[in-house]
Image (cartoon, rainbow, N blue to C red; front, top):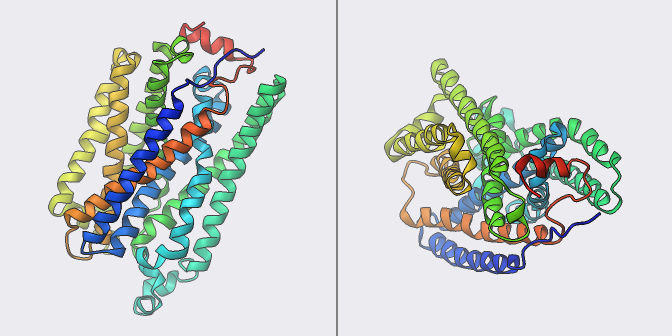
Length: 400
C-alpha cells in the first residue's frame, strides 16, 4: 500500500535554480571560448570535458542501480529513486552528444584529419577502427545498450509500484547480471573512443576500468549530496538515518580505493615499461603546472578522502560526509582536466580564458543535468513503497 513519500514541494525551486546556473554557465562559456586564443577549438574542447564529466555520473548511477539489485542489500532501496533519476539523464547525454557528432569531431580528434592520418603509420594502422563512421556507430551502440538497461529496470520498478509483484525484483536482478557485464564493456570502449583517442598514438589496457571506477565514486558522491538535501525535508527527514549514510560512505570509500588502485597500476606498469609510445603521455602531465595538479589529485582524490572515510563517526554524520562527497566531485573534474587538457595544448599552455571555458561548460551542462535529474526525481515516490524489503531497509536505518 502506498505511503506518502512524494518529492518535497521545493524541488521546483531547485530546478529553476539549476536552469539559472546553466544560463550563467553558458554566458561565461561563450565569453571564455571567444576570448581564448583557441576560439572554436576551446569551445569544443570544453564541451567534451563537460559532457564526459556528467555522462560519467549518469553511467555511474546506472551501474549502481544494477549493483543494488544484484546485491539485494537494503542500502539500495533508499537511493533507488535517485539512481533511476540519474540513469534517466542518459537520454539528455545522448541529446548533448549530437552537437559533438555533427560539428565537434573535427575540432576534437586529430584522427578525423585524413591528411594527418596519411603522415602517420600508427594512425593508418588504426584507421579501420578510428574513423568517423565507425566511431558514430559505436557510440550509437553504447547508448542503445545503456538506454535499454535503464528503461528495462525503470519499467520493472514502475510495475512493482503499481502491482507489488515481488517477481519483478527477480526480473530486474536477472537483467542486471549480464547487463552489468555488457554495461562495463560499453563504458570501457566509450572511454577509449571519447577520451583515450584524443591521443590516438597512446593506449592503456586499464583506461576503461579507471573511468568505470571514477564514474562509480563521482556518482555515489552526488547521490550522497542529494540524500543530504532530501534528509532536511519532509518526508525523507524521517527516513534517512546515520546508518544509511554510513553504508553509502563505505561504498564511496571502496570506489576511492579502487580508482586509486587502477590509476597507480596504469602509471607503474607503463612507467617501468618505459616505451616511447606510452611515456610521452605521462611526461605531458608531469611537466610544469600539470605536475602539481597531479600531486593535488593524489592528495585530494585519494589520500584525504581515504583517511577521512576511515572514520565511522564521519560516515554516520551526514554533514561531514557530504563535505567529502563535494570534495570528490570537485577533484573529479580536476582529474578529468588533467587527463584531457594537456593533449589539447599542442606545445603551448592553456590561457585563463580557456580554463574559464572548461569550467563554465561543465557548469552549464551541469545545470541542465541537475534540472533534468530533479524533474525525474519529482515524478515518482521517493521510495519503492511496494518493494518487499522496504520495511527492513527502514528498520535497518532506524526509520519509521
